[in-house]
Image (cartoon, rainbow, N blue to C red; front, side, top):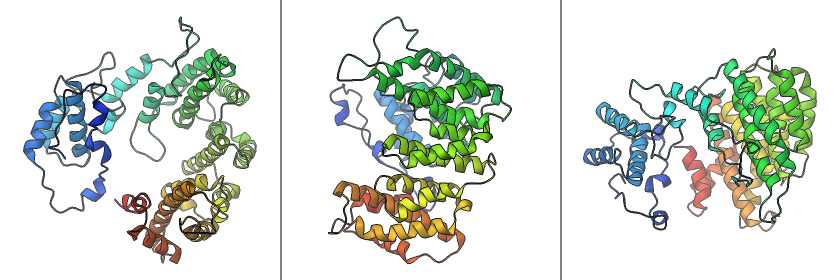
Length: 435
């Protein structure tokens, strides 16, 4: 695949007909280390390194992507890494100073990709963050509203660059820096919040929906960037409380944000737990998603010693929908179950294990396309079956790590994933998890 030709004369029409093959390949470093002898055409690497410095945008982008995959898998020698670093940073954007004509976000250059010794990507990113602005609509001179669907690159960069509680990578912003970002978020909210109540004159798009999607980024930044760095004595408590109250009033889903704020407002614990319950019992998909994200925040806070214990109800919101295969909550509960097993295994209770195993046993038949008894629609069966394989695999690893016997239910799901008659997308859930 390294020698696959790189076209350099594509236009907007033909570009989609020749996608980069490495976009469709997933290679795991852990799996690569188990391979005894990996032979790579060194001449092909040399050619890619040369094309990585090309002035042709498409040629450079594709070459860099291929070399980056080799770099992540530790398949480049020191000389090749040095040449890759030089080629990568030979073309930079202004004023941020990060490599341009690549298909990577700026935060990818913080730790995932090499850089010359004289360049400090963290300082570059902090300078970029200080200069970049949130999309303030009210201060624009033109009247029109761009339909972004909620996609704001700066917000994505900020979240992607930030160190998370369960990771060693990323920028660990100081409380002072977090407070500075909060004031900028608050300015954005105060200037543009009224747009969440406006409707456009056309039936093709809604200004209100557009701004609600934009402000979903605000809640994510609060959850992942701001809240984890605030102390209970934070000087912005009053402003933060006002913002959280207004988010609810303007119908921005923020129960997860409320949960993340427990490190600042521990006295609101019961009120937040009640909001989570209301979200779980809702019939609205967005409210259910928000509530399950809030539960995950509770586990994160417990893991970082911000709250003393996890209420039993939080685990029951995972266990019961899986045990009884509640249609509206099942997928949410299974995804959260996978996250808890992977990241917080010490919190797993016997009741939660029993509930997940009971549900998985029933889902073997209920998600089968041959079943005449299941009330699930065909597409739903496939989606749930794929999730069930992922959950079974994660549970399988949990029992292995604990040195416990593997339950029969999990052995059945492994047999399903080994069955050549099973759908590839479902089989691959176990295979890819094992790579």
